[in-house]
Length: 221
Image 1 (cartoon, rainbow, N blue to C red):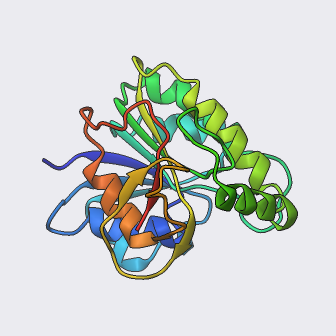
Image 2: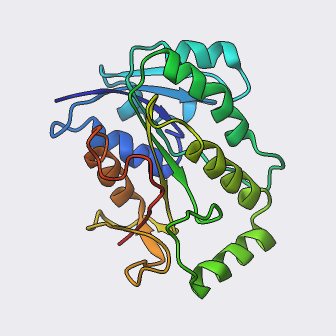
């Protein structure tokens, strides 16, 4: 059954792939896209009758209120730091947005994160430790952003909004492939994932009965 989804991060490639799949005849979802620059939304998406585009920033609480009151009941975020920006704008924006989602009766939230945030279910694994060191060295504010984001999302009351923090490894632009949903150190935890695979996984796990509600798994192909 089609749902109304509020999407953050819809102008990055992962977000675009998600929108294309969500709008396809197989799903036919209604989307509200909250974007900084509407010109970056592909014409095929922006012109779809099931799409509403709202221009705003993560610092603009007034526009976030408008987005949260759009009638959507599911929130999906693909937002992350871009370039070498300082600070934690995504984390700060989520702290403004989550109370608004709860006030407007959103029942599900799926947030993209990374293994910069460690889950209690993780086991030690050198490859993840090495990747985090690399992010700290060359990723600007990405480490602090994603760690702070993970800490905030996983602190939320799952009784008020059923959240999932889905952590991703290195991303590529390949075709959709089966996704393994696991935790670092499990032995099934690969280091690569296609962006198209993320969109398919999110659409499959949007239900309140997802086994990943209240958890922070890592996805891989």
